[in-house]
Image (cartoon, rainbow, N blue to C red; front, side, top):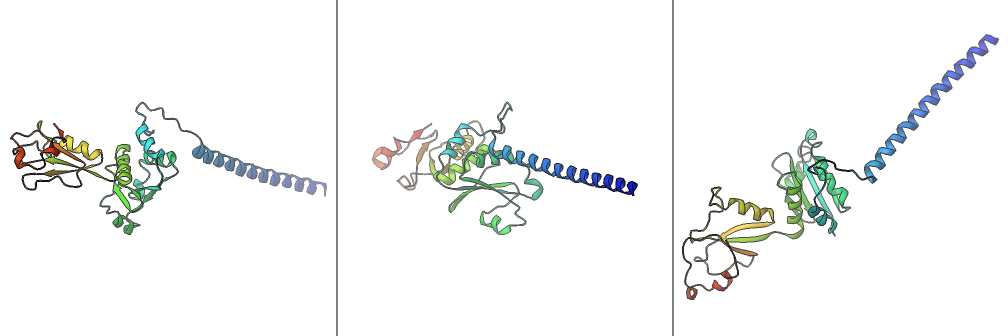
Length: 235
């Protein structure tokens, strides 16, 4: 009887030890999970890379701090591609409570992809209210420019043509394709205008650019818009 009691007691101790070990293991895992959750949610992540790869620029932070409406960033990609490049877009939602990030597989949600006219994997769309704009890439520059398009609307810059002005689409040394791209990156829609065809400045013009003409313009008495031309930006 004594031997049976000792064996039973030893078995009970082993069972109790294993139960305690399992309980402590679960408690430990819960503590680690909680620590990671609060660390990711409330602690500051230091960016020690030389190029500040994982930090937003002061210009972007200024845009985000001035938000007074909700803005959504949609990342359209296949499931395996959605894990890439998250650091940049997640910084936007961390910098402002008005920003949310949504990862969308266009194959699983084709209607949403059609809504934003998504044509390729890796597309980033910024949307606010009834307005949206496709970012030119998943970089901070591309996403922040999309924010500006959506929040402020697009301005229009007209380049005067018809007098041998610089070619906006030429990449030659005398071409203005780089200037055109710079205007577009600054939230301008770039158009051309020939005043000899219609002697007035379009009402939607935010800026009129005289881009290096080679020929003389019409005499002032024949040009009703000459006073407006004098106020235009000249190169």
